[in-house]
Image (cartoon, rainbow, N blue to C red; front, top):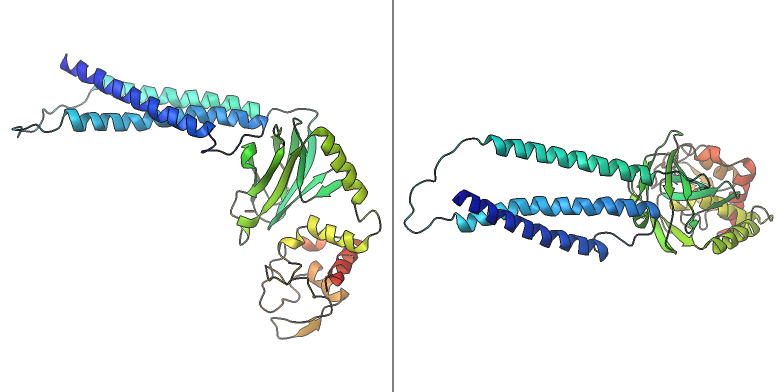
Length: 344
Ligand code: CUA
């Protein structure tokens, strides 16, 4: 009978602790202390799943803490007690219980996981397609339905977008914390899909969530979720302003440099990043690691992009993306050269 009393006592303690920690964690979650603001439909499911996990975490923590506290206070050594406690060995029903209960918990969470995974990957046939390219260390976004490329990801609210992700060099990972969902980008031509339905108008950031080298921490891009009408305006502006369509050679070169990620490693203001700065580059005499020198002209720039290993500027390493030379046509390359020339 006394044993039963202890059991009731410790159960009450564990339940009370679970309520305290569970409600505390749920409050922290809703208050935005555990996760940033929720801004996608898919994220609702992630947070729903997270809510269950927080209760499981609160319970397991309380189970250990409850038994520990109860033992410390109720079974502490009393005055005059010198002998060891009674020895007992094994308890079949207890062992069955602590095997079956976790098994059921795992199966239950597998069910919740399957249910939320299905909801998060649910396809909307009207989804807008955006091709996302990740590279060391920048992002670019292609809208094939509109023929535009951008270094900012602009999305209409409440419309599903199908992001088709690929990396050109190493593994990167597309992550907007407010959208909750995350997907790796793989090199080697393999395309991975991620579906997001943004629900909250606002400004966010894509971060790279896979350690990808020196400037991994700086591999970010702006995300803007706007109304459908504003999105239309942005698209029209983007098309009208495209310098490559209005014969603005320098502007087009700059756009190509942005869209292809050149500016992640080459600064425009003289700062040394990964590669030589483009400011004042044209016409300058460069010294190379093999002891030779050359004046920067069209031929030198073309060689440096098409075959980056040919000449390595002193103080730098060849870190040009492997396929940098194949991405630009001769005409596009000429635009980039004109842009570099303009950076006095
Ligand atoms: Cu790309 Cu980290």
